[in-house]
Amino acid sequence: MTEKKTIFSGIQPSGGLTLGNYLGAIKNWVSLQESYNSIYCIVDLHAITVPKEPKDLRHNTLEVLANYIASGLDPDKNILFIQSHVSAHAELAWILDCFAYIGELSRMTQFKDKSKKNEGNITAGLFNYPTLMAADILLYNTDLVPVGEDQRQHLELSRDIAQRFNNRFSPTFAVPEPYISKVGAKVMSLQDPTSKMSKSDDNENSYILLNDKPDDIMRKFKRAVTDSIGVVGYQDEQPGIKNMLDIISKITEEPVQRIVDRYSGKGYADFKVETAEVVIEELRPIREEAEKLMKDKEYLQKIYQSGAEKAEEIARKTLRKVYKKVGFVPRY
Ligand code: ATP
Ligand code: LTN
View 1 (cartoon, helix red, strand yellow):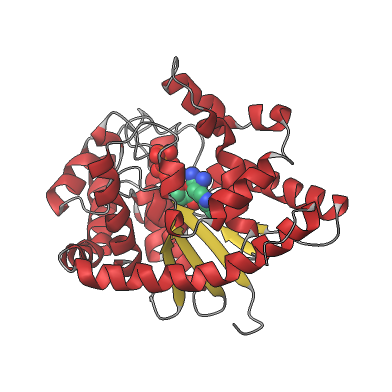
View 2: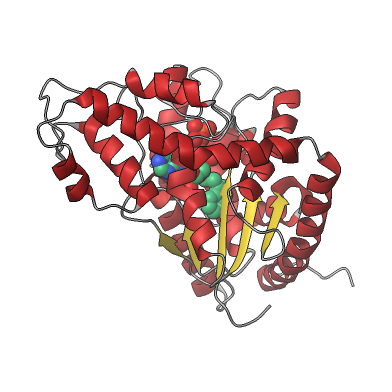
């Protein structure tokens, strides 16, 4: 690899990807791929922290890979791989578990939220989720981690663990910086615009999937919850409208204020239709390409195999260094 800085990020194959995953994460990855050494993972180990059907998990894992490529991540310029194929992730996660405190893990908002949803069967895996994420990042001497706003806290913890390890021994890990874009970092639910759009939401009208058909997208936006103010404006009292303004602006790069001005004197109906149309046109080529890729499993296999090989080489080196520092006797 050249002296370009390194990017690492990942998405869980916990369902079909949403417009939130796309605008909050993948779209930024695509624009960063020329200037960085980029490594993008499908984090299947993370996905089983809550119960998953094996057959769905397998399908979703390949679909996330197809969506990465269809969204514009070039497999020749980026390392694309599946987390469970590189065992160093699980191995480093164990070590980092021994450098993370129960107190700090208990404070993670995602853990608290997901525990509420899975009350009665909260696994140790769900609790340890952030140390596995830290392992993902730290194995590759990552400089930059492009994620949505909801991952900021996990990233802070990864930085703390890296610094703690470096201070205890000697500089070992690069301390990663978050990359969270201003617009699109938190796409909200269409049914409850005060909470984030999430692929594990029970109400399918609350999210747009990358493989939703144009009619579904139009229907979901027409049903989107707004407010009774009736004037398109960018303010906290209108979270539904604000969310749609952010969506249009992130996709078209038109400044929010210009969109607001264009709608002066018009109602919400036209505005919802425009939002839907912008999203439909952005997602159409991605859906079509991903559908094609899903029919070519051999091609996908080639990508994830060669991705794992390249990832493994980097990850092994870091793990070896870490084992040595903590005092494990080398086998060779
Ligand atoms: P789940 O609902 O299963 O917890 P998720 O939809 O939140 O999953 P993840 O796989 O946890 O998705 O997240 C992948 C990436 O997408 C992360 O960088 C995350 O910050 C980003 N992301 C997820 N949802 C949104 C959203 N609504 N807006 C912006 N970014 C998002
Ligand atoms: N926890 C992340 C997914 C994830 C990730 C990572 C993101 C796992 N490992 C490493 C960035 C870097 C989420 O979005 N829920």
